[in-house]
Image (tube, rainbow, N blue to C red; front, side, top):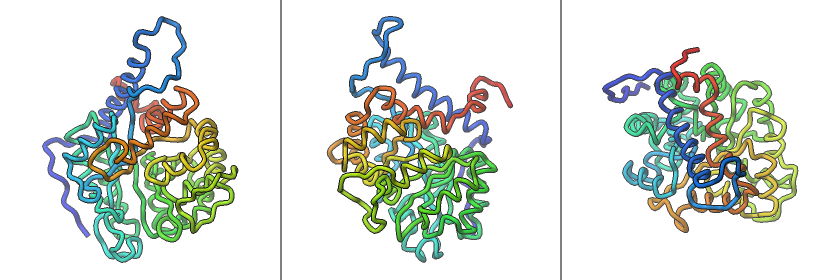
Length: 346
């Protein structure tokens, strides 16, 4: 299977593209500090008032999501109040076991492949970055992903495929992530995608240099130690000590993407627990929207509702800022890339 390289007038190296990206992310962070400190006397402690002026990094959006156009995507993110978004591509359409023989192509949501995300990120580098992806059991998977990593992809995913987390196909993906020092974002859904969440600790231990970002129903249902794997959207009160809590606590390379209905549901099902969960894991949780509406505003937009929930449930301004942009900034723009921004090659 071959795919044409997207048209482009200039070729950015991975280092150059990520340098541009980090400037955009740093700008988002600096704008946040500027607005929240405006008018505050020197030396004053930031208050915890919940205002509507947060700068937000959205680590989970898609092109062509349920048929949404590029113009609608740009307007949606602006309406939601997001300053910088990471676009997660689908693999190319194939009939393979990993796509349920084609039934789950496009991440089962008509999402666009690599070239669509790359194009928007090139056209709007101050507002969009992108990941790389491909169907893991396709013959060209690693070559396709590597092509876009070289073009500046910030990570690999969304890995939403009918595979076992310990399968040879996925281990090749993890090894590539390790080689390029990029994170992997995975959709965990019992009976459908990334089977073996209960065994994922083996991967975390085997690839300690790879940062994994967990997402979706099984990830968020397992904040509860009494989780039933077949119940994907639980509504009951949470019993602490679930598998997700333990992964976040015990493995420095495991992070949480609080996007989609599963993430919002985890916040709302037991708000007292959610406040404590955000407090304990404040350095590991990142905001993502993963919503396919055209509006970008509550009550229609699930991503906007997640923003509202985080503002209400985070116990301090510091926690809120970490979830909205601080943790993503650290994960995607580590110290060595900051040196590139200032012109110092390492």
